[in-house]
Image (tube, rainbow, N blue to C red; front, side):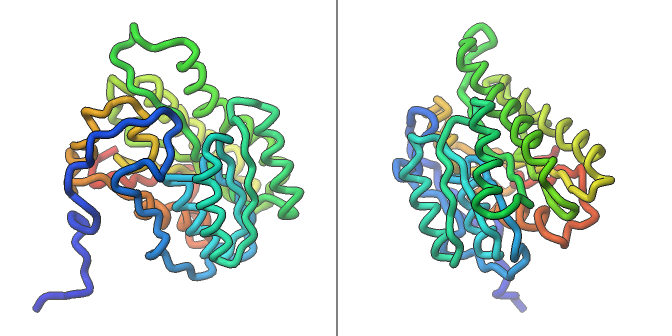
Amino acid sequence: MLNHSLIDPTTKHTTDPFPKQEQQPPGLTERMAPLPDHGEQSYRGGGRLRGRRALITGGDSGIGRAVAIAFAREGAQVAISYLPSEQADADETAAWIADAGRDPLLLPGDLSSEAHCNDLVHDTEAAFGGLDLLVLNAAHQRDRGSIEQIPTDDFERVMRVNLFAPVFLARAAVPHMQAGSSIISTSSIQAFDPSSSLVDYAMTKAALVAFTKALAEELGPRGIRVNAVAPGPIWTPLIPATGWPDHVPEFGHDTPLGRAGQPAELAGAYVYLASDEASYVSGAVLPVTGGRGL
């Protein structure tokens, strides 16, 4: 007898090739075809983060938006950081946070600035009365044809956004975090199975794995857990903004599940790591990769 409550993960979301498309970084959701699924209609909260106060970098779109929606529906207060050019996406995310009955805190600015990172922590604490959940999610990537073609200025931006900012933010936040707090980084399958065309991005994601494990060891005695999620190919504005329009149609089709993931399929991993259900989980890297191994 068939169990009609089961959902086939190979067909849960579209397996059709994505249309060829390209955007300038950082990319905007409304220009994507098809639009990503952030769990707007599907995620159901259960109060697992009630009373928590969260700051999510890159919370305007993609994985960050899915996490913001899920955290809000689980009862957390949510602040999101994003570039000023992403205001339209941030406003959309804010509307979904408000729809969950929470008052969103929008914090535009450039994460490559140490001062802005410090301000993000200060402003979140001032608005919410503290900070319990820090999600280090924002990232920058571009297609690199070869090592000779990496422009120094953009290489520096990758390093500052993907590596410097997490250190700046954690350094500012940790002195104010209490036992039971949680830090979650967004690493990547690229940390373990790097693509030559994403060499600098992959470098930073591998470094975040080391950062996660080292910080978990340091903060464990203080009752602060530190973990990472390693997404595989996920359909977010980062993809059409990477600079590989010819690669977009087959994006994600090389996974065992045969398709790209949607941001909504990441939300549960972040909620789990942020919640008390993961009270004995620290220093872990949780893969959400469509079956690709780490």
